[in-house]
Image 1 (tube, rainbow, N blue to C red):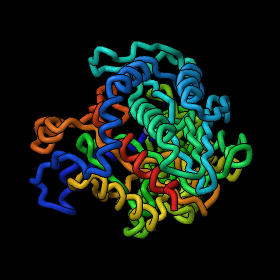
Image 2: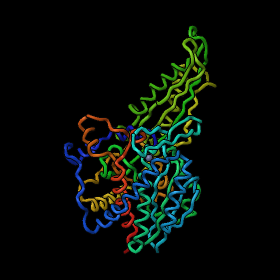
Image 3: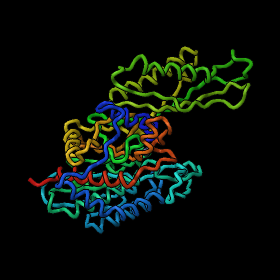
Image 4: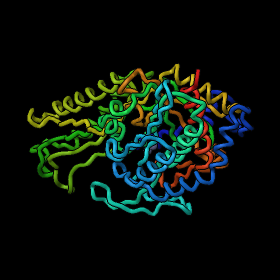
Length: 455
Ligand SMILES: [Zn+2]
Ligand SMILES: [Zn+2]
């Protein structure tokens, strides 16, 4: 999950989600025993739980940054080999592709992401990460699985194990992938560019989950249609003519011009965007100048831009360029000093759950967890590069869902305003991992067995 998701996710409380379906005061139900045909998977997961928590704690204590997931990949590749998957390492950098063929049938891609974040962990857990490293920019940092990708990998390994042990119950091909660099929007693209769909069986279906810091532990959330947003990073270099602060008439002040640009950018959303088609333009950084009495030569603005459709994305980027240039003209900046607008390469495309397939998958999960804990959740403005696997071939039936990780008592305390829940990417994010892992392992296996079911 990319950065700005965290705050947005945090803003969506379980009660606000639940209010669409039930009274807000209704506490999230506790799961009763699943139906007999389904409880076999739940029981198998429960039996494996001790080992899974050992794996989880190990992954949590040893996180690696994006594009550096070397030990994580090696460790998990070994497990997949032991389960008799045909394993290829170093796909798109540190990616792992594990294939299991089992007769003719659909090809299902199951994906987990591996990277941690440059965050100094402050959860106080006894297996908290103490890892320290330097970012590619040379900044000293801690490393933490603050987005919960360690829960993703643990449930992924359990799903692999359960599927390998049930080959008689399904047919087709499993392509289980461990993806690097989700947090920087590069991992899915790197794996696709390294032949994920040409060197390996091309998927007909793709599934993944993400832990959620705004849903009670064990609750499953799903969003038909657009689930997560296009995420663009845009830089605006505002050029001016520097000079003495006491003689503004001899300058073109890039700070005043930058301020005008920031203000006018607000109208891209408030006046030009269809209110029914959500989008975000946030200026997260405005850097200029060094001293009280000097008008600088330039200012730099850093923006995050969010949208769902490609048309809206293009319109916003065009609007940012138009506003920047228009304000510079209004300020009398010469032609050769027009603002330079750069859309960064670090783009995460929106994630789309084809609605019919999403409802079908949600129906299966509701059948497996017959206690009302599978709920429809609103789309978010965060990003996830899982969307690339569908965009690379839109015939693929693709589905990503949420698994809540907030302990019930914290959820209740938050609902009554006693505490503020940490979001994803927070140094305090400590999901109730056993519940996330158990729920996700069951959910992924139930979906996989149905997608690959025998006639
Ligand atoms: Zn994230
Ligand atoms: Zn994430």
